[in-house]
Image (tube, each protein chain N blue to C red):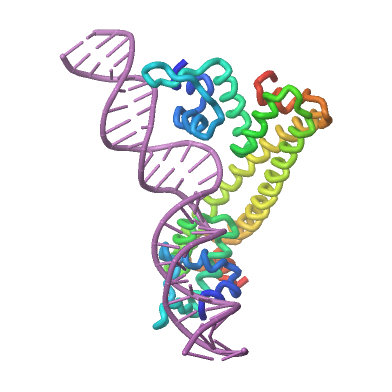
Length: 129
Length: 129
DNA sequence: AATGGGGGTTCCAGTCACGGGAAGGTCAAG
DNA sequence: CTTGACCTTCCCGTGACTGGAACCCCCATT
């Protein structure tokens, strides 16, 4: 398979696939004309990566998870540890965003949103709370 | 005031303050020795920027908000529009993260987390759902 | 044989909002 | 006079790509 077919099958842009090769996540073969030739195991790996990225894992996490995936003697505890650390990050991010949203929500509600200049949002940002 | 004092007063790193000057958000004066000299209005602007950034506004949003802040003839509707657009982004992000967290949460719960290799997390990533 | 179009390739630059660190000038205190 | 804490500019790196230029390859049509 050429990169275009793989892109269609996995939903990953060709650019992204090349990037993943660059950083050593996949190692497709090469045809005589220089084209990448992807085996089914490469496609499988790329699907794995796509799903892991969709769950928000960093590339380095993906590298770790791939290694565990391919290691028959892994301990599921190691996988769980990575997943838990990642979930903690996500929850922290959600908490930050919720705080922002709550503040913004109050300010937006308090703002008339008409053609007059008076605005609680700018008052707050200006520090005259 | 020199940059260090401003950094202490605003809580912004000196690097950030220099960066904000670079991109034209503040325009401190200069002393003969080349040091930046910040007037109170500069400090005020930087505090504004710090608060806007803490609410997650992009630098370009900050630029817009600053311009509105300094425009006596603004319409609060314009401010509200920027804030609403930003809040929509935040809510979209929160929704994404919540979806990730829910999926991760299920997978983590299903994973034994012991020394055996069997792992639902990897099974899911591998596509054998 | 030339051409056109739709593949593919590499490499370079840009994104966003800074942070790290080097190399060097300035200033007040001991 | 030297130390140490400031300040300056400049350039590189971050994460995970994306866009674009310049070029090669292959098949089909004129």
